[in-house]
Amino acid sequence: MEVSIISRETVKPSSLSLNELKPHKLCLFDQITPMTYASIMVFFRNNNTDPNFNANIPQTLAQLKKSLSEILTLFYPFSGRTKNNLYVDDFNAGVTYVEANVNCSLIEFFKLKQNELLNQFVPFLPWRNESEARQEELPQVGFQVNIFACGGIAIASSLGHKIADGGTLSHFLMSWATAFRGFPEKIIPPNLSDASIAFPPRDLLPTKYRSLKDKLWFNKGNFVTKRFVFQANAIANLRDIGRSQRVPKPSRNEVLTCFLWKHASAAAAIATGRASKDSIIAHAVNMRPRMSSNVLTTSIGNLFWWAKATSKDVGSMTLSEAVEILRGSLVSFNNEYLESMEGEVGYSAVSEFYDSMEDIIINSSKQDSSAPEIYGFTNWNGFFNDVDFGWGKPIWVGAHGNVGAEFRNMIVFVDGHGGKGMEAFVTLEENHMNVLEKDPKFLTFVSPNPEGLPVSMI
Image (cartoon, rainbow, N blue to C red; front, side, top):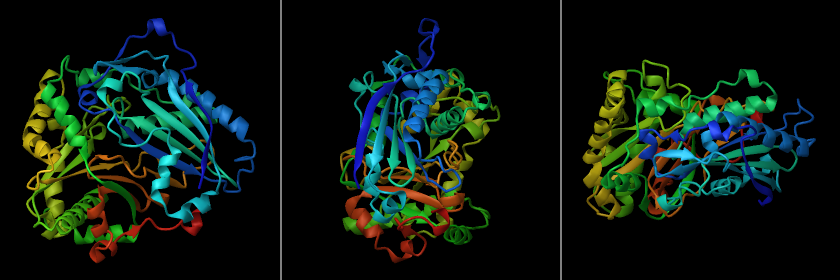
């Protein structure tokens, strides 16, 4: 497969009164999120119901760029640059916009079964540790429109995590798609101010926490990323296995998180030849739906925080035991806890988290063999399956190929085909991944990067 760049340019908001705009304040959780690009891509096909789907590509590309410029007027912080880890300004700097041709069809691409090819569809490589020194130069976001031969488009986003999370990107893409279809009156404007009011930034984030946030996200290693698919029946079976008296109805997210946690930890023990050791997961929790007030529903920013769960030997636990541990951590993220994080006093909750993780994070970055394994989880289910540019809903939502040499054990969940199954983009040390891929108990419930799409979707 070859991806040929047609054009690479900067797109700016179509109409901004720059003199009237004040700098956009970051919220506290933006400040403690490093600058790195998360990628997401939505794939559309010619389903024969729209004969013009790929018939007039120049007009399609022109309208995509025009509507992107229009929607940036509402989401103008996306078009700026971060300054001093405190605010975003220079809104006329623009976003990166790339158009590209792919020399194969969608069907041929899926038959390749090469997850690493996904990185060719995005303007910026995913999950690299972008230095703070470069933050004032880097675009907040980039987009790449990929045109496949014989019909098909993939719109890929490189989201600068400093200013936004998956919920924000979902809102942006839904708004862009609505503008492209010509229904500006149906767009729900973003809330640009309440996140920094609820979670005010610190004028000077302590050096210790600035260092720890990078070490929490990044760690040098030989990482690889693989795609694993959980079909609906496998998820149902795992939910049955994960039931217990304390958690009679575990969610899909809970059972798949714990299933992967168990088997990744067991693979790490085998790969390193060491007995199982303490294992920690940090699961990103979206704050928006958990707060009693819905004022932050449309707010842009990193409105998530980490639910932490720890086990001495999760690999030898039953799935239901692991689910009970995770549920206990997630239950604590109630409205009362989240309200305690608001305002100036909320900073203490962030400090408490980093203080509790300090020795673990530092020892992990030193490759200390006694340090617990840390696994990050984030669930993007429900965020991108309804993005519709007029070609119908996406036939597939992809995340990323291999990450850089500095990242961490990380699992990203996205919707499976039709929203029934789930897919996991799993990043682990290569020798750990080699063990995981041969684990028969693991393979009973997953399909490693299956070829192509279901016949019904093609």
